[in-house]
Image (cartoon, rainbow, N blue to C red; front, side, top):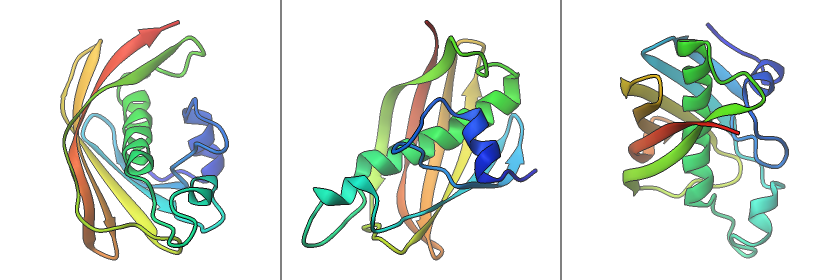
Length: 146
């Protein structure tokens, strides 16, 4: 299964300037997702990180992996699409930033569910640019109802 940017927006709570997934390339509900983020030099985070040498912040890469996981969760459980519920990032575990991500790069995120229950999930995420792993680690999520 693939998804366009408009379909991605329909599955995320985030809005501009925090949408970090442009397309879904592959989706296997309950198992894994592969997404794409085109890193543009005119994104707001590059105004301050860093003005003389733009580098994508690690928190933005984590957000891209987390949003990819959110799309996977909504297709796995059928939940998370209601306006008052979402899977919130609860913990960042063993995250490693190996290579800088720069404007002009196309970042590919691959997320695999390690364990998932009705109330929580643990995933392993890898971000790559041109087949080079730039970031890898695990994220934990907890269901929140507001």
